[in-house]
Amino acid sequence: MLDAYTKADLRSILHSCGIDIVSETGTDFLCMCPFHHNTDSPAFAASYLKGLYVCYNQNCNSAGTILDLVMKLTKRNNFEALRFISSNKLTSDELFEEELKDLFTEKPDFIEFPQVTLDSLHKNLMESDEGKKYLKSRKIEESAMEYFDLGYSHKQNMVTVPLHSPDGIPVGIIGRSIEGKEFKNSPHLPRNKTMFNLHKAKRQGGTIIVVESSFDAIRLWQAGYPNAVATLGGSLSDINVQLLNKYASTIIIMTDNDAAGKALGLTIAGKLNRKNVLWAKYDNNLIYPHGAKDVGDLDDNEIKQCVKNSIPHFEYMNV
Image 1: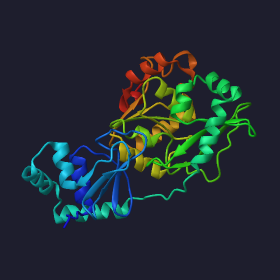
Image 2: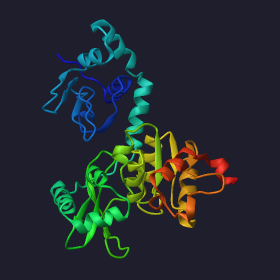
Image 3: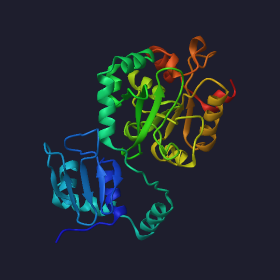
């Protein structure tokens, strides 16, 4: 008979094996596979009800018991792996705390946006001179168009940016007109329940850079910072705060260099005051060089210098 685990015990075991949990179903944790190192979507499932794991990638197909998993990843023998599992099981008090945490953690429901629509919009962009020309005028390269699955609508004459839930489910699109500065998002876009690129940024370590627009986050990716998220506006919801609190130990504020951007940054710093909060800064005298308003006005080297020269919140407040 296979061993079953409590949800909290298996979470503890997986974390101790270096496996990050991306999302969960009623009986399984969904993770990035530790054997073939997938990075786009979670292909690995570990069941606390059955005590089994499996990778659904056809080129991997790793499978076995949780005991097998521990033995493979930690290079322990059977006896040592059993002791490792036992040491990671929680006490009754710890289990109670974990159960309370699950009950009081808000888990928004998301309606999945059709992937076929995203694929069609992306195909339109890659075959469209108008869409690519506009994005290149915003300093966005074709590699980023591919990586972020950017799209283009001929009918609306706008470029599109997919938005995902924290677990990587597509939940809508952010539309930006090519002429003028008009935004047209898909209906009921859940901007207050997630942030642009959070599903990828959260896997880059404990530091998250916060900007306002999706284009700014994309520019940071091009400059070598895949850990940027965008608030998609000048406000921060309670769920956004929970998400930053969950996935970041250090937060670098790189909001727009105007009154609204500073106000957003101060809100972030105030609501996450237990985190290591830094502000991007070009040098001792300038937030951004040559009067730049935001990341989109900077070149890659200027972006790197701003991030590298980030200063603590208390120092920023005394400048």
